[in-house]
Image (cartoon, rainbow over all chains, first blue to last red):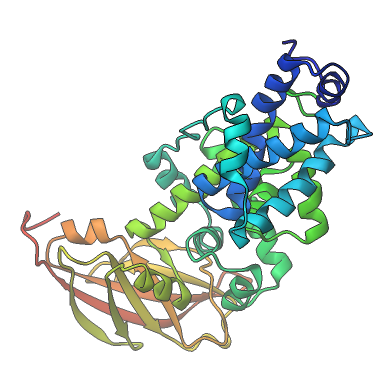
Length: 180
Length: 196
């Protein structure tokens, strides 16, 4: 499969030709993106995997049936499907077993590992932050506090908290050697 | 959009806000559409998620000397983290220690911060000679104290010694005014060398 094919190209090939290579490429390409969406909204890797599989299957059904009239709008279609699927998963009313029986052989396993972070380097980088930046970062990622709560604690505006948080994240990424 | 390149990458800080569910809904939708088309930004989001998780672990370890909030302490306690806290009034002193079971070591320095602009937290030896400083610490003028976390690892390894913490207000011209001094008489409770 030519990796230069756009997502819209894949949609056309699936709709017009039932191209199994295009379907496989669509699964390979979209599954990691859908898992990210699932992780963000469901906060659980297994639930994210469920979501990815269900959205892929729903999408494939639609593409085979030619229901996506504008191939350039694949992302919009999948985003809408993601939202509906999250609601279904949260209600516990999903069709996983039936769909897996039908399409399971086409589904790829999830990648098991994400990026690794050098703990000692991160400790050095966090120590190098300014005091306010360090406090904002810890309150944000450990306390999971909203900007308004951090702003109240620091006696500054929410906009200022956002500025401090964004600067700190960029500095941390630069210190850790990843692109800003 | 290409699979392998991105002409309009999303700022990592915005991705961090996305991961925290802190974006307005319109901005969140734009980010999600982009992420469904762009693997480069997806990789950047994964890096951001890993960084967020590593920061969470780092904060939980208690090895950072830093100012924290009461909400931080409440969250830590809810997570099962064992917190040892000492509250000291201005000019006061406290006998303190740390045991193997402690996870976080907290000093609560009571002070009138209502008139303070910039505040520095200085760490001094027993004679009051400054050894280190956290400049421009975060503080709220309406609060009656500064809560700071000392590195639990450093203090578990520390011998018996005295440390003076000093809160200093700094005006725009660089002039300093002591807001409070707080003496911590640390007694070693874990085996180790007698001195540093």
